[in-house]
Length: 280
Image (cartoon, rainbow, N blue to C red):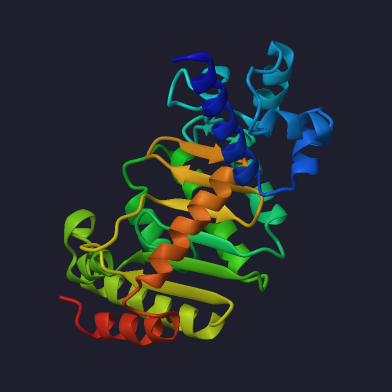
């Protein structure tokens, strides 16, 4: 890559960083420890050379991008994530994950929480369903799972605004007792669906549950805790992102799921009730 092409790539990616940050150029410059005039010079069309190395580092470090990406040497940026393992729980010991989960919900008070569940939404699960899902876990892990569910139920009951988006097909599998629900007695499935219908009807519109068609849309499980963080569920761990870029990206993904929903929140309670009546 020639010198001019390198400068152009640098300017393009610097512009992308500013756009992703969602703040003014003056604020971006301050966050990077630069003068506004310096930033203007870096972006000038007639710029013919790269800034000093310390300036490039000052731009990259607070915005979580690699120097190689900023200079166009790679297309891979730097994504900062926090790995939290819910399996790192010892019996009769305080769990860092439990405390962290509670604090995230507490921080999200007053903000909208957006949630794509792995199975059924935690807020609507009966104790029988939690027991079914945790039957293969150790006692400590099962207890942690239960506490996580209870934390989300408590959050839903505080009046905070919660949006849930999940697959209609997975609910239908539950009603039929198929997939991971194979062997779960009909009466427990029916009771769960009736409980969910009552929960949703009572808390609407503060609690809104959208259902999308999994043949048209796909999503991994994740939760957007207001403007604070996103936690992506990866099975044995959570990937926790706190950058504004990640929060905006996952929020945008969630909003797309909502736009494509085939069952709207005001219809969800009736739909759950109909599934309960057709459990087999």
